[in-house]
Length: 168
Image 1 (cartoon, rainbow, N blue to C red):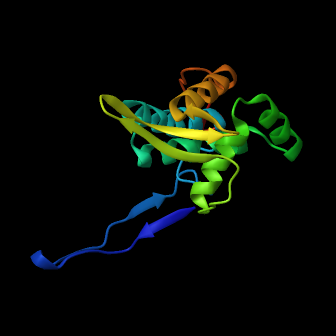
Image 2: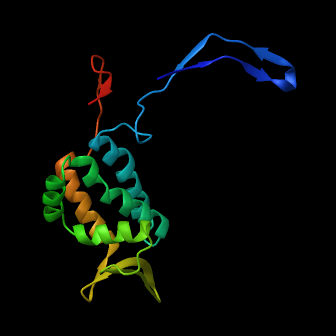
Image 3: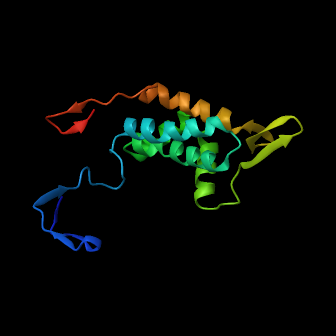
């Protein structure tokens, strides 16, 4: 998709420039990023996880980590059958789904509850309570991260393919 700039105005200087500049839109699509599961996982999700791991009591980074980590499945799987199979394999799949969708859609009636644990001389931690069992959120996220690392690699080095014009 190409766009043409017809005029640049700088009123403070009384300038109008009519350049012959051709501008093109790179990678048009439904998202701002390259549309490939490894790229999404390593450039977006892993960064959100690192931010949360720095301060595991921060709700903002926890929510970002949970929502983006939950959606790796959507990027990785092509069919509903694949999504169901991955959900059965992935540790804490139902818990992550409840947190991600419960947060995004403000659902108070989810099967697991979230909260913050704190006390004297105890660092504050975000927790999940499911079936009367308390689990630290960081434990859940690290287990799911390990699951996806096994499928998408712990590190991502993209190589640009000149022929296809995409990173692989």
